[in-house]
Image 1 (tube, rainbow, N blue to C red):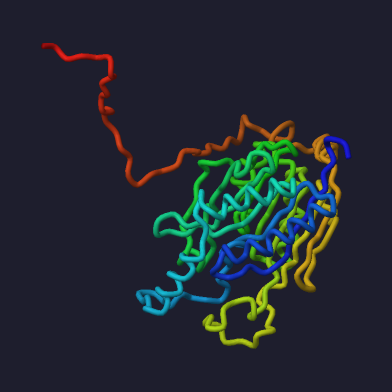
Image 2 (image 1 turned 180 degrees about the vertical axis):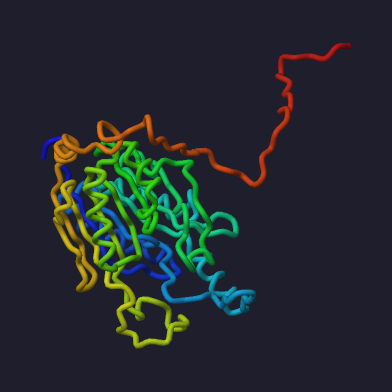
Length: 323
């Protein structure tokens, strides 16, 4: 393949819920299968390490939190990912061993708060970027904190400009505008949404951004969750049917949407198509009107505690005091 050509893989598979460490074995198997198929990049779903707590309310109602719900949060927290930490070290090792770039959805643990996060893993440089979902959707706000733009949604890599926009962030037009302006070539959309409207959104983004779009979702059944998980449906009940897909910059679907079970989708892509598409529509270039519309983006991270003041003065060994 030329420098503009890549082969991408999308993993559609269930997480090992509440146990990110246990999920690493399946991740390695899928990444190896993608590498054996000649893929340069493999994309995993939202919350693939740590799990997406579908259908659970964590014992909440307005004004109510139950002890049982608090303990489910404790379990979710215990099975999440520290960044950096042992799991990110292992992700870097897998990427290096298989020589494949990975985009992985994880549940990140930071103090007492959990975040829905994407990790970018380079075979040579390890973890090169992470970013947290800006706005948890609906009841996700019970268990996930809000992210920021301290890290760009688009990472410049040896393979091209790879972006990751998580689930319903894809419905945020200003975030899309920012990502387009960052020059995204491969738009990764780890998600938990498998509705038909999601396919429409993915095709729209491909055409709007003149970029390839890769949507990765879990295919999950009740049996993929712990036996005592508080969701009273038969074990073979499908909780999410995936609908993962790959779309080219013209909006043509190259693979998927897949709804029949766990799967790995692949496609050969050519970033020259992005440029061909920009000939008549470049949303951040000749088809923009900065004289009429501009976007201000805050890229600093807000901290609840900031230390200010003078630093302590050190005395070198060759300095002597007055006698």
